[in-house]
Image: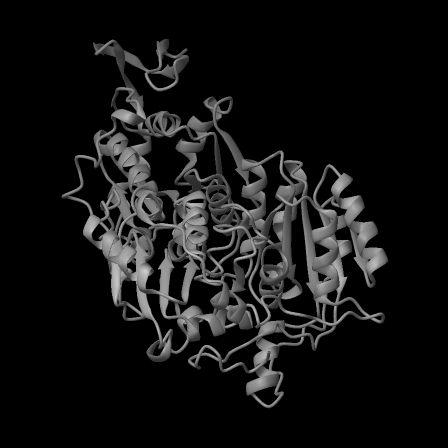
Amino acid sequence: MNGISIYVLQSAYDCGVLCILGETREIVGGISKVELTGSQILMECLLEQDVDTVFGYPGGAIMPVYDALYSYSDKIKHVLTAHEQGASHAADGYARSSGRVGVCLATSGPGATNLVTGIATAHMDSSPVVFITCNVNEPLIGRDSFQEVDIVGIAMPITKCAYLVRDVDNLADIVREAFAIARGGRPGPVLIDIMRNVTLDTADYTPLPREEHPASGRLGALIRRASHDLKAPEPNVEDVDHLIDMIADAKKPLVICGGGVVRGRADAEFKTFVERIDSPVAITIMGGGGFPGRNPLTTGMIGMHGTQASNHAVDRCDLLIAVGCRFSDRVGLQFATFAQNAKIVQIDIDRSEIDKNVKTDHHIIGDAKKVLALLNEKVPQYKHPEWKKEVFSFPAETEYDDSDDTLTPKQVLTSIAEILPDDTIVSTDVGQHQMWAIQHFRFDYPGQLLTSGGFGAMGFGLGAAIGAKAANPDKVVLHITGDGSFRMNSHEMATEEHYKLPVITCILNNGTLGMVRQWQHLIFDERYSQTTLDRGPDFVSLANAYGLPGRRVTNVEELESALSEAVQSKTGFVIDCAIDSDEMARPMISAGSHITNFLLD
């Protein structure tokens, strides 16, 4: 074997047989220390983290890593996407739907920069993804070498931590630390950029079980760090007790379910809490699945496209408790008058979010799951029938008209809800279809809704659906998109077809950039500048070109037939739904307006 020996070692982290290449140096604690290349060390560290699937696209600088991956293909599955951005969204969808850390690989230069939208998306929505890139050889750094870019500098503002690995002896510690940071505290993306020469250099490697990894690596003081802690701060008991007193005094409580409930998998504790205090629950876009959408306490989405029940409840409550919610401008809208009649309480894992947008009267810093568990130990049962009657005198759902002439968003989404299983994972892109999907579907568990809430990245949905299907092969995965969004990353149908991932894509095709057109109609005097998409492709023909079946539907009967066919299909399936270009996402409040100042209701 060209002087390279094969050793079979007992893995400390897998209770099985670990096959690695290298030269045995010494025995440390019963585990063989071996000399491996940086690329092999990277593979072993991924196995330490229980990584079974990675998404990526190879290139020159990262070739040694892919060469090592070839020898690990029985342990780590690689999904080759059509574009690096698709890989970034797939790793994100994998992470959101499974609760595990997603992994994405890309080469230097354009390969790395093609990840930026995906990194920013994961950052804004607190999704734990480790992005691994390789850069040029160290002697070429700073010389404007072929496909050289400072991806660490680019990624610093949109990651929890960004590493440049210049020494193979530090690689294992950095990888272990990166995963700990990605999943620890408030989750988020981490970037590891490895010099190409480091992937070829050799160093001693000793397997280390994940539970024995240090809370932080040895290099923490030397490498740029984000302000987020590896561990969530422990909730202050006095702060919890103060909130219990506030709840006792409240006559009109309202609770907001934010993305922190979903990321922290705190849905059971959250449900117990709100049912204990008998409070209506408004749900942010990122909070979808944190509280059952079919629960009678649900008032629906809150904010710019929120329901009348949610937004009026915010305006009329006397105690507002926001759990894992950062009060973004799409929720808080006019910060100065938000919940103006209430005492505002914010529960968040990240101290920097407190009072950033909306000034609070009280806050608790800590993991939502822990904080809610403490509250549930002490909060008695309350009843607020009159308050609930007042809140639900306003509609908690948006009513859309049916039509005999053309499909409406309501007809499309109602048919989908009736035919697909209740536990279907739903990914969306960004625009009107995103709002319609969140309004009409009922998300019941964390990871069921995958959407780019904070960054609003068109093209997110198909990659995320691919990642979700890879992580959840036994669940139906539905991709809801618009014709504008689908154009962005439709080439990932090649990935669907090759890996036989039966994702159902449903395009709400109105021949326009619908959300922008809606604003142009309402605010810009119907000057439809560059929003009309009167051009190809024919999406069904495009799907066929990628080897996928597709149907164009214009009425409910055709839609239901196509859905039934798609469910039974063992491949990806595209349904192109023709809807009217003048359909609008309602309700709607213009940016910066008071939360009950509906432009459309």
